[in-house]
Length: 309
Image (cartoon, rainbow, N blue to C red):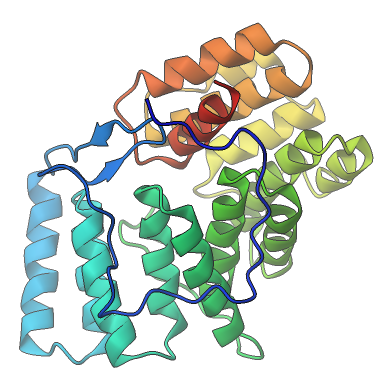
């Protein structure tokens, strides 16, 4: 069984360069697999639904009609990723980088999908580069792939770059760089959805660093009357951390969805840094027994278990 390093490795972004489109942009995996887990287990995509495939077909037609349009490349890559074909999406975004080397969106989306396939260093290189490209630029709303119930996009380009960069560092247990990225993400926030999602990670990072004061400061913006449209799981976790929700009530909100994996992971982490390592470990293994290997909660659980085995 393959193991990752047990100690946190601080990745210095200086000198890390995004993978060029003509280079070996993908690791070797068994036929049909999308990635290898941090334990060396092949990971395969689930069968995509009919509506997801229909949206991919539409995006492909737009791309084929005009393959030199940056928006067409991005949507073709995003729709490909939504089917579970992360490797195909990375190839598409790499083509976009070759054609539009100064478009931060290409690096943002490829970095996201490098996280999905457990290529954290490559994700960091792409997302650090994206962060440099947006320096001095005005933030912009990032359209949703699947609109929420109110059809109001809640994320931005700057916010997503910092969020995914923070996650990539977090998964390597590089707490200082993760904290830096998520604080930048919080500062670029435009709404309560962004505030609760970044606060969740900032709180966990501070607790993992043993900085109780920073953890308490991170929770200061959280209240019981925030206008959260989409990130309800992160909001519930933040209220739980702040004492506005009991553990029992928190657990009652968690289901088997992708958001549920985030909820389970947040509670497992809370048990860990509060000294109940047995419950934390049991919950982490429960997450890894599920099928949602591409969710952030699952990947974080995998990184924690791998570092402790």
